[in-house]
Amino acid sequence: MAEKRTFINIENVVASATLKQNIDLNAIARIFPGVEYRPEQFPGLVYRLKKPKTATLVFSSGKMVCTGAKSEHQAKKAVMKVIEELKRNGIVIVGKPEIQIQNIVASAGLGGYIDLEKSTYSLKRTMYEPEQFPGLIYRMDEPKVVILLFASGKLVCTGAKKENEVHEAVAKLQKTLEEMELIYYERA
Picture 1 (tube, rainbow, N blue to C red):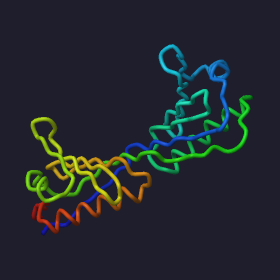
Picture 2: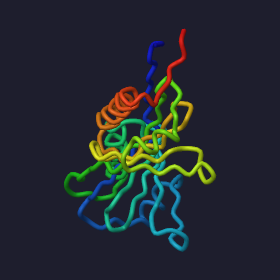
Picture 3: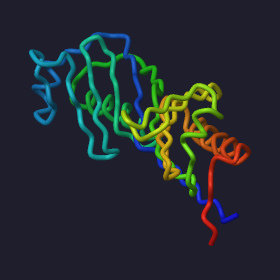
Picture 4: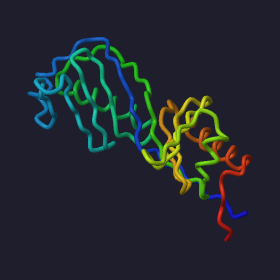
């Protein structure tokens, strides 16, 4: 059996934050000409950061949603940076935000080829309709994630709330595929 070469890449971390106060989005739009705010099209204001490269939606209710971060830490840092920039420019924000990670999307490669047809019957909670979509959809119970699995051994994992859940899910899937002889590694 050839050596396994598993890689995992965090593609996007979505975090939400609650400020427990109303925010004047018109005032933010006046102070920060770089933000996007078109209330007739969308109720939120888009605040983009270059570092970390993220977009944070800010709503008048004080709720925020940050997307584009590549780690949990980066998502939390981005939310705090937006809040600090608002405060520094005269927007009154009382208290600390409650920040929660909502979703982590990661890609990975298992380093082998997968028999998706057999996997459909061997794994529980799967959906595979190759005429509709080339990947197998696998709903894992523990950790609670959804994995899109492709014959090439590449996958997309979504639904994790912590980065270690992604690593746990990928390792668990790889072990299961090996035990059920559903993954084939090329000989070196």
